[in-house]
Amino acid sequence: MELKYKTELLGTSDEDIERAAELIRQGEVVGMPTETVYGLAADAFDEKAAEKIFAAKGRPSDNPLIVHISELTMISEIAAELPQLAVTCAKRFWPGPLTMILPKTPKIPSSVSGGLDTVGVRMPSHPAARALINASGVPLAAPSANLSGSPSPTTAEHVMSDMNGRIPAIIDGGECEAGVESTVICFEQDAIKILRPGRITAQMLMEVTPDIRIDKGVLNKVDSSEPVASPGMKYKHYSPKAEVFLIDGTSEQFAKYIAEQDVKNAMCIVFDSSDMGGLKIPFISIGSTAVEQAHKLFSALRDADKNGAKVVFARCPKTDGVGLAVYNRLIRAAAFRVIKL
Ligand code: TXA
Ligand code: MG
Image 1 (cartoon, helix red, strand yellow):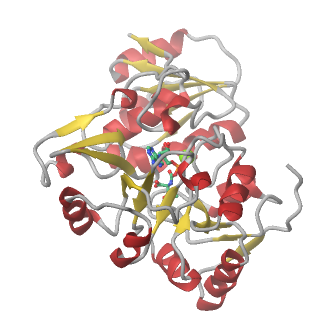
Image 2: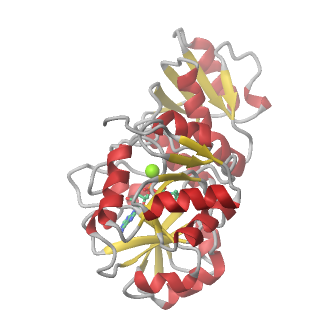
């Protein structure tokens, strides 16, 4: 892609939000902070603007975008139907990191929905995202603001490193709180199916309905020729340039395994101080709780690249609660290479 923009870094003042909103109204794409990860935002009703998002990311056109709203009333122009369960979820979890897949209205261009007759909708809680939606006066279609395939950006600096020259502006709203993308769900009668796990966990969704299903693509590799519930799951994802291996074992087994490796330019992603004793390979620690791990994971993958790592050995996270989101991202970053100790 031609790098035609001198990408501006904006703050979150009223004037800067207005400047960004003006760009959106002109059909441009703006880097937007959210509580999950940064997004690449454009007018969700503008087919051409949505096409610019795909071009900036280098994203396959069949992978749909999420539409962001700031008020529940905006949903009537986006979703053709709102099941009762969706209303309950909206009341319980919005604003917040939950995306619901719903039948779309004709107003949503097919470039936004990736040719599907459904659309993902979410109401972010980040004040700058909400301010931008309000100032633009339209819902904003926004995928994560990384180049297709790379780890999602959790700081404005990450967005700049992927998007410099490709978009006119980025709003710097600080480091994203969650660090992993929203939980994506769809509805199957009285059941909720998780298509992508995130900070809103299966346990939390059980407050709304007891029947929570987890799509098989969450934990398993999806064949690119198979039809999938969420097109994003079939693509190579979240990968740093380094080759990532997920090492499944205790911290002692991990330390022993690392001691036996004789590789140059390797790096470890570990959890906490109990993992660090005597590791001869440089490491990045992402914390002992799943919430901390989610917060730091993508930035650790980007740091591995910055440090020139060719191989990354990462400890295998637990798969309960928010851990399922961490595992889902790491297993894809590792292209499903797991070494079981
Ligand atoms: O937290 C997030 O969700 C961030 C921020 C910016 O809001 N956005 C984000 O967007 O992660 P993206 O495009 O990187 O991921 C959207 C995921 C993809 O896996 C896509 O396939 C799925 O949601 N998705 C979107 N619309 C869908 C639809 N109509 N049916 C099934 N899956 C859909
Ligand atoms: Mg993404």
